[in-house]
Length: 552
Image (cartoon, rainbow, N blue to C red; front, side):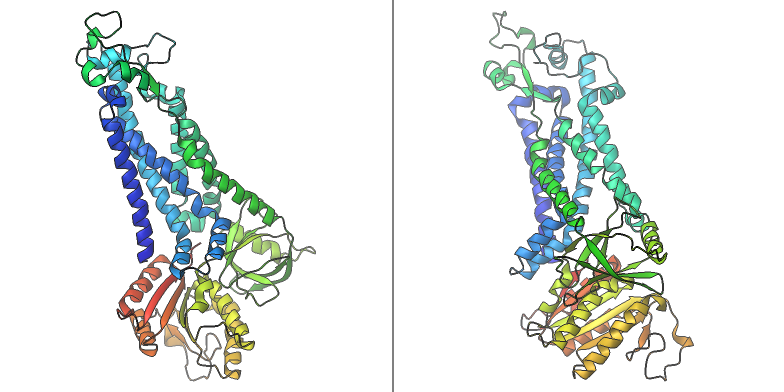
């Protein structure tokens, strides 16, 4: 958490620096002296926010280049664990940058609405004031040396829809509003398709951004003109400007547009993202063989697959596309198989139209299995699980999936006495609302339980299952195995008391480094993060808790 905050602080600092630097530049530079006469400080507000928009538009694509991130995780596998953890906060950073873009867009629009009013007022004023004289300069010539882009009495609507900056500005803003609103948690979880398709408006956003500044409507005095006309002296007496006037040493000022530069900021990330998409397409075309299909209770579909050259680590995820359901949609699923197995598998729960349709397609038992395309695997925090002496794994609901992979892998490592396994103890917590969702996971835990006992390592795995939506009055606890799951360790009812759990782990392992891994909701993440800080000792020789969270 602390390092993420440092990175966010660095990003925030850069935004503040860019804004202040360009605000002061446009508010003080001699080149924009006459532009400021017309527009006042609205010029600086518009330009400074534009620079920050370019900066954040440059960053927004980088966190979603998942092949690039996967490559970086691989190349820095030897470097500090904290550095690798930063790459798991990619989506958090993506959202943060998006909020900044929305904020700076609002500032930019308001500033330009003010600018339009000032331009219009100056154009209409016929009172011989400096702003009126400046607005009339070079208006009738083809020389393109004018300062005020409004050449006749116009309305905001007319200028908005007849100029390149106005029209592209509207298009960019509409695209942005649709992308931000459709990516709210509720829509993303319940109507993924709406989020998925709307988010592709980013193509229109970037196209509009690159074109937006081409017309160069906001202008400054040219360097050549500044040599012949110093605004700080000449502005006092605008009536005497011009070469024919013997009282004046000031020629009429000439103005030029500020070159469009958005493309310079976003070109490299766009090229990188295009390369990313080409790579995704190439990977998705490689043949995937579905070797086994199992439909578990609670409408959970298990797919076991094989793909040439596919190599995975624990807790990684893949993107799946099924052309028979939808050609364009790709959905992320955590791998539930272990790297030691000769197949890779996912468990897909019915949530939303796409998953419902996919499960129905496989349940129809057609002679030919529906085609599946796979992109991945991609790395997330669970790969680091074997690097900690003690690991606390917390899965909420279907969030247990990355830990299915971890527990299976541990089982294989035990079978083959793998020396690379640093882990001495695992605490596993699964929080779930109903018993149906436990069904597919029971077999794995039961076989794991048996294997551990046979190896004399029964104490290695301590697991607790919590049924959060049940009342325990209806059960008889006299049996050797649990009534709900059939496992030897009993199911608890209600939610875990994390302070008690962390306290017990800290007491049992007073000098260990404990990795806490969660795949679950944000509220749970906050509770666990708080406990990690609370129960970590200040003494570097004593117990330390490190928090890791899955991000999809």
